[in-house]
Image (cartoon, rainbow, N blue to C red; front, top):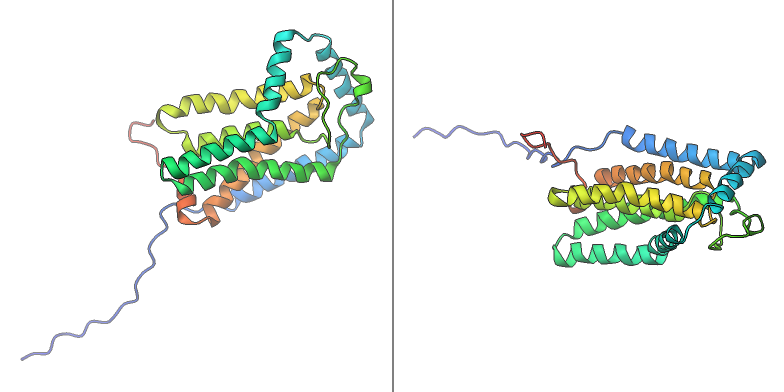
Length: 243
């Protein structure tokens, strides 16, 4: 009998990652944008000329108010308040987790929607810009407390819209969620100035900060989150027909 040839044992090769890791730029660029927003906020808060320009814009808007726009702005203020937004986020996450059996998607959605807003509160505490003075706005519709830069309501609207689009925006849901992600932040940004609780530069800063914060959270989830969460926000290959 001839001896069977001896086969050299080979170490098992690690399985390739299902989705590619984001490049370092995907983390560094949003961080740089957020830092620039903070520096801009510090400069704006120290500039009486910018504050005077903001006040002039608010007063011009206030002088052109209508009952219909009043109602829309007040409703938007309630819809994207922290309490209402938390309820919406909790309901959507529960439906994804319990109804669709997608815990990874639920966690990813909640992180994308909430973490940018929490970050905006940190930016507010760094910049510490006061809100528009009610004494300068005799016909203002709403009084709010806390610091002004950036707008938390606008940040929530951006983060919520993008989180819905990133996690659930496929198939028939893509078009309505894309429309919501565009329209809701713009309406909210306008309403915060219209109501006299934020300066125009506050909401403009939110429209820059919030997408950068969402992209930062997205990159971190793709790089460091457990597989079920990372796969919920993974880049999906384009279909053969290009759609």
